[in-house]
Image (cartoon, rainbow, N blue to C red):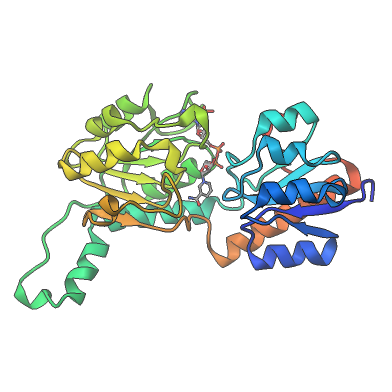
Amino acid sequence: DLVTGSILCVPPLSPLLRDEVGRRYDVLDLPVPDRDAFLAENVEALSEVVGIVCTNAGPVDAALVAALPRLGVIANHGVGYDNIDLDACRERGVVVSNTPDVLDAAVAETALGLLLATRRRLVEADRFVRAGRWADGEFPLTPQLSGSRVGILGLGRIGRTIADLLAAMGCVVSYHSRHEVPGTPYAYARSATELAAGVDNLVVVVPGGPATEALVDRPVLDALGPGGVLVNVARGSVVDQTALVEALEQGRLGAAGLDVLADEPHVPASLRELEQVVLLPHVGSATEETRAAMRRLTLDNLASWLDSGRLLTPVPELSS
Ligand code: NDP
């Protein structure tokens, strides 16, 4: 190896990933409670750490980077890396990898599932059957997903995969990103509000972080309107959750399917009480096949950096 030293595992990590890192390297596990005390009391062990393995649920902030004088690489298990302080990394020359492409299909089918569950009220219909209400009369008719208009907020790798699935179902797809994507068959909208105004369903799949904070705000939700469905598979931070709850409670928005929330894993009662909301515990990429591919890519990035100083899939902000 070009670089030797230990690897810091930032929780939560799946046991499968944590165990494989442990088989390959000397490992230090960061505790969740008393993290700062741990950083203060283990200066010597921390000075051996050359790499971090983490996921989007494990913050890597400036204080953690500062506590690791030999840190060179962060291998993030996930495509989104809004958990990592990139400025702190840039200042120290620390590079970061993520896991693009391998999770597109899994996240796209999660979005499709949420669209079907909300538009066709499938989860509500299941509750209706279980409550013994079927014998009392028919479940109400619902709008259909096929043939409806769907807006994709963020036509990137995952957004494009969702768009193609929906196009195959006869949906009319349009999108908004900061830049118009050349060569797509989908119509471009110049803003999130313009996109929402022209569709029945809005699927949010932009990165998290300050640049997209509350990008889906009250005006966007009102543009989507009383018959509209919002699906969020991006990050909770992208949607103004207070405005969302108000819009749903007041009937200004039709329904919402949410894989991600503002303060995970905490779910406000106001959201849990709404029949027209489908809630998932951030399982967008959580299939056996995809998680195996993500683990492999995370470990391959780490090994590649330790062997050659190069990452396979560096995040664009830190690779020049
Ligand atoms: P990409 O980088 O391929 O796509 C992101 C898209 O968002 C691009 O089209 C980009 O276009 C657009 N975008 C970025 N910033 C803005 C902005 N401020 N306003 C409007 N559009 C913007 O990423 P992926 O498709 O691979 O992943 C997208 C995100 O999905 C991840 O960052 C992650 O947060 C989330 N995700 C969630 C998962 C889950 O479990 N629910 C699993 C995997 C990912 P442009 O630059 O032109 O604006």
